[in-house]
Image (cartoon, rainbow, N blue to C red; front, top):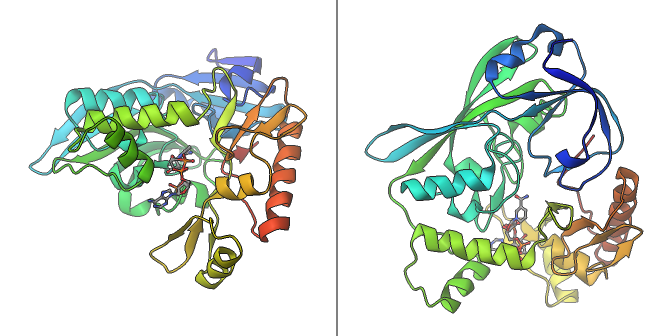
Length: 339
Ligand code: NAP
């Protein structure tokens, strides 16, 4: 075993739900070249980023590679865009704030999303009408199977709603690929994206008619701080369920029965429903089952009120899914990955 590894490492501080679990072995990766360590290839692996989209259901029998590669720089620019590279271990929010401070806008709607730069493309993080795939250029990853670094550009990533090639192919779960660097393309022609009512309202309250990128970021940070629990105080994994997408007929039937139902028509003709609203209507906002509950200010966020295990999370998740299914006949799919 290389010196890089430690054994029997407690992972509770490495996941934002603060669930207890140990890894048989653990290595903190600060340089891409460390991934080529021959002993790593033979083991069952899990690639860990910020641990903010993760449910640890028990001890991990294998090797946890904690991606902590730092670095951020302007790679190049042309007449239309800046190309910015960041190490997979960079904290996402700090990176977004840094791009704004440099005068390179375009990621402001994704302010305060927990996690790391390397994890962002895997689930195509999104918020307030922007998905990271829209600002993504390419990434570099170590492929444990081919024992080589590869570059994946945007048109190969199959970005979709909280989804990408990396999830679809199961490469992340199987530990096949470890993303080391990501390059973003930030267009120089910037237009504020104020599509979501919360953002427009917050700016109106601040009497800002024509916002700068910094003002959009500040508004989003303020909204998120008001609505979402800080994992350092109340352990959570952000939005716990995907917003379900149903066909238009089904949405019309539900809307007729539940007049307040938020419905967002999608380009493919289907309709996105708000999972948080369904959970709230099913009686789960602020409700607990043992140490796990749905947050009192935002029903989509599952929180650990203290001392919860992965089994407690599964129990509450199943109870919420059952309540929503019973009331609306809609299935909720969890957003975090379970290991
Ligand atoms: P919200 O503003 O209360 O809205 C509830 C849901 O309705 C959201 O999930 C959102 O879908 C949808 N929605 C609202 N306005 C919309 C519009 N103009 N067009 C299309 N869909 C609309 O949501 P929230 O829970 O406070 O979250 C705010 C934003 O942060 C959302 O975009 C949410 O997805 C995002 N967020 C993302 C993560 C993550 O990436 N893991 C974690 C926490 C929150 P969408 O979720 O599809 O946007």
